[in-house]
Image (cartoon, rainbow, N blue to C red; front, side, top):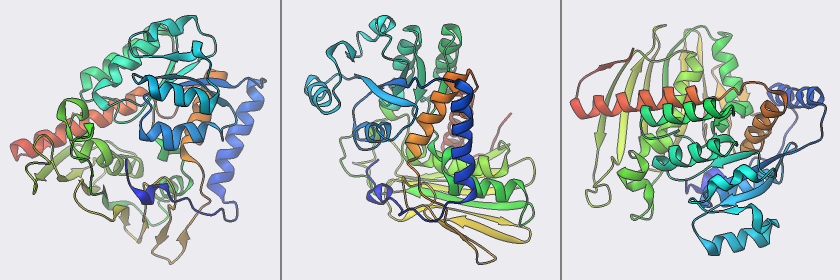
Length: 367
């Protein structure tokens, strides 16, 4: 996603509790594994995210290494081969992914293709005997999400979804504030993420590839925030969409707002847009105070404030490196991931309900 602020990284400050906990977890699990073996990752899809974030992050990981690529562009294959010293035997296209089954260099396929292709490529990777890390949103329908989960289970391979903020110290601190009720029960959450989208021909504006507009792309971060702050699943949603440029946004919404009610009584007001700048925050209002992150969802620069005037400003990490290192440790130690396929499936079900609410103008009840 082309948001310049999401590439700004915070300068490291004094080590804080959430970061220590995360590092300690990695270290203890590495000792438990009793091995120095690094997990080999192949990136499927060499677009902006892989080029600017994932490949550089893999160079920073402790337990992973970039060993392969999957691309439909021979020129990209040659460029990556030279830059990362990837041997010819570890370069694949989308039609021959099954040949990975005979390649011990690759343990994980990180699927970074357009949303509506995630199932196809994840299933191919699983059938080749590889673990799967799939970018969010997991897919464009609950049915396709279930197909990915079933394929990985049948292959006996782990599946994780790319929820990088589950490893980000400032977001983890806000989860602690909410769960420990530092300011009492959370009652209202405001969350939003958006940016002015550029190229009108890109796949994110094509419904058959994206599955929707900003809700599927950046809105999922706001949805996730409401879920991990409350620790609950919404029971009702209502929504409204708008389009001000019917040429550019002829297939997907330009902006969307939605409300969600949670079983514990909390209510969330959320938004996502491809038309406005400066929206990347959440605020949790509780009985005795509030806390917020602004920006909350970026690749770097995340920071916030509490109603007692204390800053939330923990050290920056490479979120993708932390995400991949954690998955590597899950594989090495035969442990479940904190971001399994079921987590991705839940988000997609809720987003489909939000779209239904916007389309019908009615409140949708969630089972």
